[in-house]
Every structure is written in structure tokens, then in C-alpha cells.
Length: 265
Image (cartoon, rainbow, N blue to C red; front, side, top):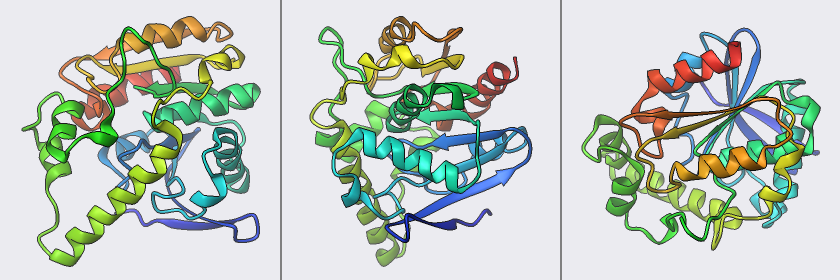
């Protein structure tokens, strides 16, 4: 089991928690609004190919969320500062949902610093004809039904099952609420904070990876991202069968294989 590491940033203004494991080309994983409960199986598989670094965002285990306010630019610069402090110069960026939006913002801000970009069902755009779901207003059972292809799958049950110890269960619930509150600063009421106006700056080859049955951010958004990534030399869309929004948890091997194949090409 891989332990969380700690980094103090900007003279202690931020205390950053992160996982780091593996060897080879640096790959940075940016998690979504569901947080990162540990060094998950998808990261374990990726770490056999890359040196995987997975920071916890402020509000999800790292401190300093109030310093970011609701400013996407501050969030983006903060994350680059984390990578600078860790000596990660030119990584592969992989981001899921909220983390996908952040990865795209990072690649737009620093186009030459991203080796390759993998956006897994990224947030950040809005289509009037195909609105994303407001998961902040959902009950837990509704969220599970929307996020997973199979709400009765092992992955869905693992997400829904709380620890048997009451204090541990309460702590999990508190952490989830804190994470949702942090995500809401950048995704509510609409997840569109102008990313579409900046995507033309992305220069990295980009993989858009989606679960075919994603109800939260429908696969239709892949085409919108591809259209706006006009400066990227390559934009590939890949959809994974029998997967919803949490494609890395539901179809771990297929999703990791797609990432490895694209980034090694």
C-alpha cells in the first residue's frame, strides 16, 4: 500500500498531499470531484509503465482551498507550482472529470510543457443541446446510478459501501462533502469557465477517453473538445464499452491499455 507524501508549498501556504510510485516517463494524474481514496488499481497499473504522481487537490486532502477562491487560473498555476516543486518538467498529463478540465487548462497555459494529454470524460464545456447533469443536487443513490454503467457492479458497491466503524464512516462522509464543496467552486452552477476559449493553445497530442454510457458528461462532448483542440497535432477519441463516467474504475484494464497505447505511440 502506497503512503501519502507531503509537500509544503509557498512557505507553508499550501500543504500538498500526493502519491508517487513507479518508474519511467513522468505521468501526472489529476483526480475528479469524487476525490482519490488511495493509490487506486488504475494508478497501480499505470505505475508499471510510468512514474505516476497523483496529487490531492486542495479541499480533497490538501490544504489551501480558500486561497484559490473560485479562480481557475489560480488552481491551474497552483498545480504547475506543485509539479515544479517536485521537479516534474514535461509530464504526460492525465485528468478525469474536474481533473480533466484542470489538465486541459494546464496544457493551454503551458503548451510546451505537456508531453501528451489524456482527458478522461473532462468537465469544462457546456452544450445547450446536451447539458451535463448537476451531480451536486443528486442523492447518493442517484449519483451512483448516473456515474456507473452498472450500479450493482463491484466498483459501484465499493463506492457506496461505508466503513462499518461509525466514526470512520462519518469521516468518509465528511471528506466527500468537503470534496464536493471544493469542486463546486469550479463546476457549479455551470462547469464552463471559459476553457473552450483557451483550448486552441494546447499543443500536445491529446486522447479523449470516454465511457460509452457516461450520463454525467455525455460522450457527445468528445466531439466538442476535438473541434476546439485545433492547435493539437493529434486528437484521438476512444470510447470504452460497458463504462460510465468512472471509466477508470469500471473498465480499468481497457482504459489503462488505451492510455498506454496512446502515450507510447
